[in-house]
Length: 186
Image 1 (tube, rainbow, N blue to C red):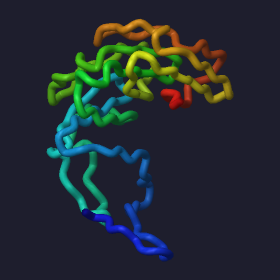
Image 2: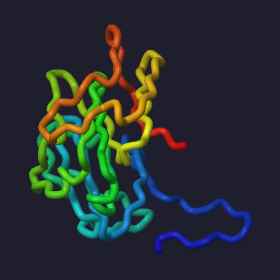
Image 3: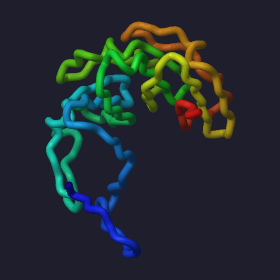
């Protein structure tokens, strides 16, 4: 309701204003009854119903995420997903900066405590970077900072339990890190 249809021509309206060091990182479409899953760089997942996230006008600054979630000190949200139904999506695939990848049943994240739960076990110096919903037949691509890419079927990664650390998704050389993980759209 904050946006209206525009006739021909014109300049449009400002969707969001930012201050100083702020930037819009992601825009996630969601319905009121969906559940938002927030993944942190420490490998934890937090859950919040969309209707419990405070509404804001399109011109307001918004509120810090730490006022909505009980994040630990120094913890940064690196991925967020809107989940309409925990039984319908099938799987969630997670990737870390050091090239680890993990696939697990989405139903394992249906009951998340307010303090969060561990979604992936991380090694020292690694951090969770990406989380994507998959259906079991998708293909995944991992891209590194040095320009290497690896595309594979998600069925090559077996489904694991919540506490597992995942498997090697891509071998990295030297100081290379994963810079992106996406699900391939047909």
